[in-house]
Image (cartoon, rainbow, N blue to C red; front, side, top):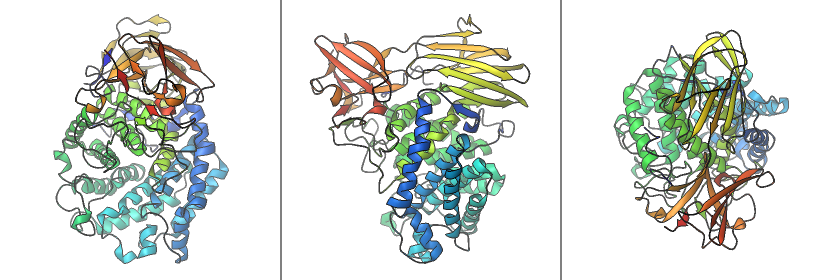
Length: 620
C-alpha cells in the first residue's frame, strides 16, 4: 500500500500571457515557460475539452453576461450615464475573465465571429472609462465620490482582471485598444497610490500579478515597481474597510509582512493570487526573501492543508483555511478558482527551482480539483468541490458570484502553458499531453510531437519532427511522484539507470530530425492513506491511478454504497469504457462477495443525482 503524507504525495518524492523568453535577463528564474501559443494539443483527453470550451463554454459565458445577467449592461449604462448597477460590486471581473478566455481561444482557434464579439465588448469597456482613466461600473453608477475609500471593494481586483484580459487580447490579435484602456487605469491608480502617496492594501489580490504581465508586454518598470509596492504594503496596519469592522487582516493576508509569512491563512483564492504576484516580482527583482517565504508557505499548504484532489480551502465560513489537518469531506469547500490558483502558483515555483515536486502538485490540482469544476458537456460549473456528497450538490449554469465559471473559461484554453519549459541547458517536459510544439532555441526552431493516451495509459513518445540544425541540449523528463516503475529509451535503445535530478530524468544528446524518446510509466491502482492527524479520514482510504483520484458514485453502486469498504486483500481491475462519461478508465475493487465501481473524481455528477465519496471505509 502507498502511504501519503497528507493525502497526496509521498515524502520521498516531494523534497498566461505570451511572454518572450528572458532567460538571460532573468537569472533568478531558472526555467521559462513555453507559451501555449506554440503548443497545439491534439490528444483524445484534452483536445475534445478544448473543443467544448470553444463551442460551448464560451457561448454559455457570453449568454450569461449579455442576456441572463446585467454584467455587460452595466458598462452600457455607464457609457449612457443613466441606469442602475445590477449584480455584485465586482461583477466587472467576470466579463474581463471571459474575454481573457476568448482571447486565449482565438490564439489557437481563430474565429472571426468570436473576435468581433470581443471587439464589441471592448468598445463598451472603453466607452465606460472615466476621463481620468478610472473604470469600474459599480462606482461609476453608484457614485464616484465613494471610490477608493474601502479596500474591501475589489476595485484593484477588477483592474487586475482588466489588465490580464487586455494583455491576452493584445497578444492574440495585435489590437491595443483594451491595452490602452488598462494602461490608463493603471496610470490613474499610480497617480493616487505609491511611495509618498496614499497607502493601499488590496482586499482581494490579483492586480499584483497583472501588473507584472503589463510590465512584461510594455517594458515599463514603473508597473513592476507598483506591483512590488502593493505587495510590501501588506502587514503594516494600512488595510481597512469602510470602518474597522469591515477589515479582517488574516482573511486578506494582511496580518503580517509577506516576508514573515509561514502559514497560509484566510481566503484561499486571495492567497494564491498573492503568492503568484510575489513569485513574479521575485523573478524580476531577484528577491530571495519572497522565495523563502513562498517555500515556507508551500510546505504548509501541501503537507498540512491540501486535499488528495489538489483542492485547497476547507472552510465554507471563510472560503479558506482553519487549523492544520482540518479537511472535512462533505463540507469541503475547495473552490474551483483556488485549484486553478494552485496550478498558477506551482508552475511559478517550478520555474525557480527545476524541482518536479511543484509540477506533481500542479498536475494533481489540474486533473482533479480544477477539472471537476466544469461538466463534461462544458455548460455547467462547480463553485465548491466537496470530496463527499449526499446527492444534493450539483453543477450550476451560473452563479451570482460567477468567479469560477469565468475562471475555468480562461484556464482551459491556456493549459498548453504547462507542458514544456526552456532553460539555458535544457528542454523541460512537465506534462504528458499529446500534440505538437514549436520551440525557439538559440534561433533554431525545433518541433516536438508528443503522442500519448495519458492519463489512461502511461506510454509516451516524443519525436523530433524537425530541427533547423542539430542541437545539443538536455531533455529533462518529469517522472511523476506517483510512478514507482518506468522505462526509458532513446531511438529504441533502452536507457539503464538514467540520471535523475529533482524528479527529472536527464538525457544529454545532440538532437536531429527523427530522434525519438520513448517513456513508459506503470499505472497500477493504488490505495492512498491520509495523514493520521486528519481525523475525518481515520479508518478510510482513497483510490488513485496515475494522476487521477477516483470516487464512488451511488449510481454505480446502488446496493453497496453505504456499506462499501476496502481491505488489504482488495483486488483491482481496470477497463476503458468509451461510452461511459465521454470515455474513462473505470476501476472495479473486489472484496469477497462485493464489488465496488469507481470513476475519476473529475467526472462525478454528470449523470443522475446520487451520493458520492472519495474516502472509503477500510478494514484491516
